[in-house]
Length: 295
Ligand SMILES: [Fe+2]
Ligand SMILES: [Fe+2]
Image (cartoon, rainbow, N blue to C red; front, side):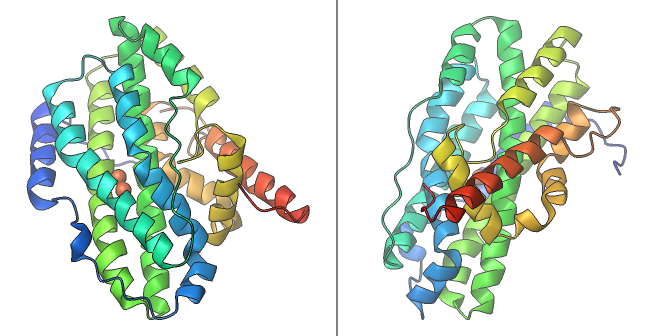
């Protein structure tokens, strides 16, 4: 249930960004204790998830290019967020996880750095202010959903590694990473909330945002491409998401349910998120049944 919320001010958002910059410097590579007691066991249980997360974190390089295409007129707060907080943190997550992958005897990540056609098209139209506003809302909703997925994955990974007695990597790799993700989520959530509450978008723009969101929703890291959707299916199974897809979809779709679909019956859990998750899981199962490797 939604509690009534205080309006979010631009000042609060700016202060939040400032706080993140001060409290969460990027994690230095040499701060990490790379001791792994049983690499084969960790790889068997979590290797696939770590590979996936490493790749997605390293794709921040592409995310910045997308951001600049979609939001050419990005304001100071947003600029500070992506340039001074988000990018430097995420790239370290990627580099640290990538090294962990190779420590576990797995191949290094190969981030997908091509900007999608859909982003290029929207980006080409984004010099029109009303379209850029739509793009901005979609960008923020994607950020909120993505960061929430990161928080949930790192929480599970942290708990699982602790349980296995792999305290060094749990405590010096996964814990510091997982502590940085909620601040990113909060930034996107606050920014999207402010846009709706300040009625930045007119009804036709909101309509367009809903249509585009339904048609272009991607689970984190799938990049709209079959091979990554299949890979995500395996990750979803390893994380146990397949046992209750609807609850997970509700978790990662909460911000858009509230902001984009408020007041619509049955939109507590956006059906396009459930569909995207199911598609990934089915795709992996189908390949596994044929005895093929995912991605
Ligand atoms: Fe991250
Ligand atoms: Fe993040």
